[in-house]
Image 1 (cartoon, rainbow, N blue to C red):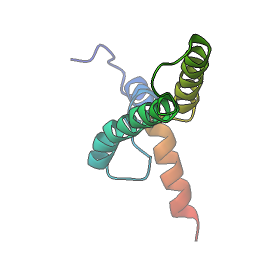
Image 2: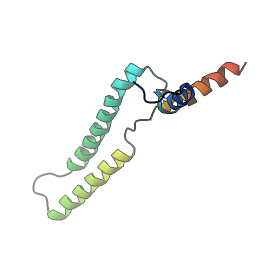
Image 3: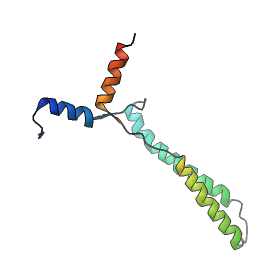
Image 4: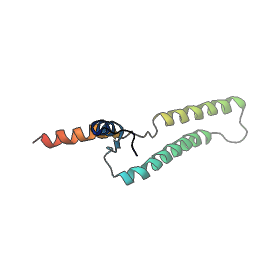
Length: 106
């Protein structure tokens, strides 16, 4: 049971705190695509590391090994920077205000 008893305060808090998905796709597909986006980021990291490691063959001296290791770390950092990011849901009040503006336009 809610501790807030006054209806206007309850409604105001509801509009501020409740969230709605406005990403532009079905909510069920969003749920599945979040995991896919993370998967693509991890695959990209592994692919970038593998490309650099493919250049090493046979006995490798310490300098080239350290250069490749540095390159792998930089590739992983770059991949994470451009990788998948979730977008937060919008407050219910903002979503309803936007719908109201859209209805008023001819």
